[in-house]
Amino acid sequence: MTIWVVNYCPYVEANPSGTDREVPRFRVYPEDDPERWIIETNPSLPREVQEETAFLVAGFLSDILGILHAINCAGVRQRDLLSSVYSSDG
Image (cartoon, rainbow, N blue to C red):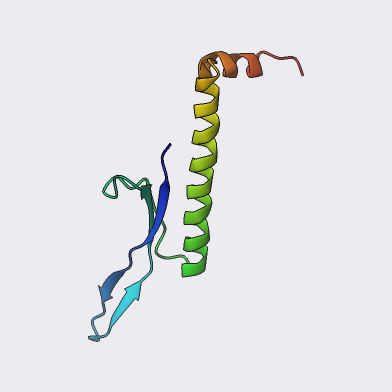
């Protein structure tokens, strides 16, 4: 199963006044392939919001992919599962 990593990867923005500032940014990627990041946070948001969002996404990916893996191991095709959900009258 894939382990999702949250990485803090800021960049430096040069200002015309000569003072550089660090711009916060986070990326989420699979542990075995850091170059294949799937999200990059919005650097215009506060650092704390970016970090929380990145960890929420990483947790969500772990959970949803774990559920899909369990469904596949149980022999249920995802298409059949979704069609039974959407065809119910409840």
